[in-house]
Length: 116
Length: 209
Image 1 (cartoon, rainbow over the protein chains, first blue to last red):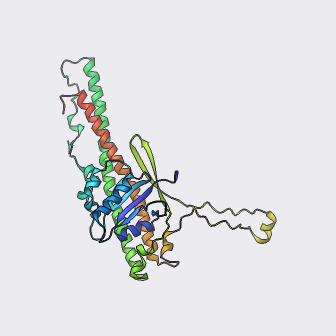
Image 2: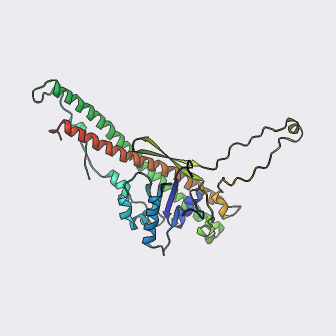
């Protein structure tokens, strides 16, 4: 594992997770927890939050990709994350286009006005 | 949140004499000028980074949307239930990893790396005589357990072209995700540097704000 680099985790709907797993980020074996979570209609907010926190606490994950509408459900957990690693990226979903105003990271970076 | 004060508008006038010149205040003025120049440069870089971030994000969103469309086409060709979590392998090894490097203190940069890249096959013969007769002998290498299996194989041997296109779109998306993560880190780092320089400037010129 050491020297292999960090993983990319994904929390999203079926299509998003399937797509990124096709891209080759998936890790699943008996000894380790998976680095992905498919959020379905019956997935509870607690499960999403627990998984997100697990990903944050793992030192082998460098980026967490999360659909924005799912990020909205656990916004408080995202806002509390202040470290540079793992980086959290919000991505759109099929039913919910991306809204930069809702993105915790991007709105924090864009905040502040330049006075000249 | 906090306001970014653009130092361009508050440059001291040339030859402006503050409270009774002297080498001390000249040094302070020079230091302040240098700081302002540094602030200007940092601010311009930040604005450039923000613009680049917005551009990359738009491209990432577009790639992900292309990927969904290709997945939908693949489902149409293979069947609705043929492309989804039911086909995920029970054992997965990541083909793609992230290399994080620290360019400067607190500044992380990410790069996507494909693992399981095979070294070029050595065609050179082990025995020259055999080469002339039968061509290079290829000793069957043990099937690499380290080489991760292509996730496309989860969905069958002959997969439609749309599924390969989906894989390509999401693979591009991963590259962009790494770039965006690097940019976000750089912007955060730049903002903290900016705050530090503004504090120093306030200490040098408490009156100017």
